[in-house]
Length: 200
Image (cartoon, rainbow, N blue to C red; front, side, top):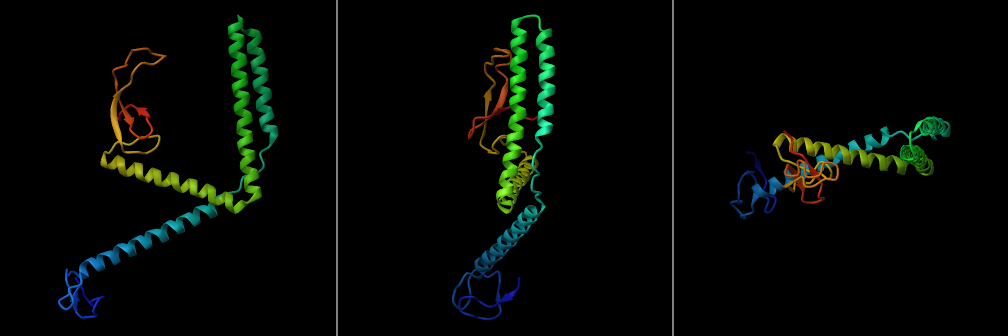
């Protein structure tokens, strides 16, 4: 408790915990509680801004990806696929080899394309790129903090979207296992529909 001035009428030596000023009836306790809450929010906002600016400064601009490394991966995949293709016993196995080669080659090119797009984006506007990466990092950090807090409280949450609107369902039929284990209990997110097994 502290003796303060009434912010409404200016009366001196009024308790900061008084629900009503003896002179004008102003709720002093509520006023100072709101002031303290506002102060805490401003401090938290300043801390978040400082943390974000630090993240921005720590973001490194990507270097231009070297095509040579991806070409080497492509050559190795191609040589290995040719060996497997000639070693296959039938057309089905050859088809699987061809499918695997095409999939891995596509992933190799996709990785190169994504890295090059990031490089071009940073080259065009380095500061905007840093802010974009920093925002993503901050969102991920806040998500981890929320999940750690929920874990401590024992509150289940969706590992995909983070929602705490979780229900129970059964696993149901699967193409790979059929009805085996179809009655097993699983969590289901009421927001995005994701299913997962409860932690044991």
